[in-house]
Image (cartoon, rainbow, N blue to C red; front, top):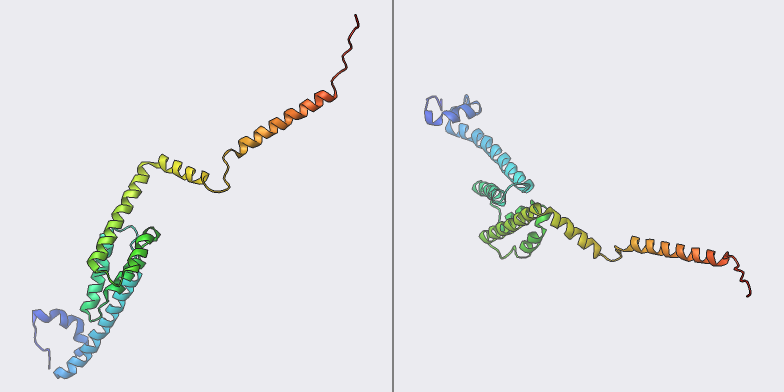
Length: 195
């Protein structure tokens, strides 16, 4: 019977696949079920890698970690005989970025056919550093940020910051005119004595 000996080097094989070959007496008979068994596992692994790669998102992870994780998944697929081209991998990576990266996504998408993975990675890291610096600056100067927002609102068309003040002035002015008309209408007649 095949596999009727003990070898520590194939102990893992014996434990995992013994049920597939029990009772078989030739190497050909052993090979066929094992090939189907591991081919099925290989297909499942490839599907898992593809799904994980297609659905990955950067979230709060550093750009470096996000990029390296995508590269590791792509390398695993390549080792399984299913490589992904650089433009496709770049598109997948860009798809996992949130709206804060729209500017760099637009730029890299336009040049994706001609850019190398090294340059692609360098652009992502540079933009991420700039984005983090802007976030820190806004957190350190919240008052200046609010003032900037208010200034931007005042510059919008149709916005009149003196609207209430003008309305109040017109109200008081009209009220004063009404009082003058009232006074002129009911002013008592003054009698003068002749000398």
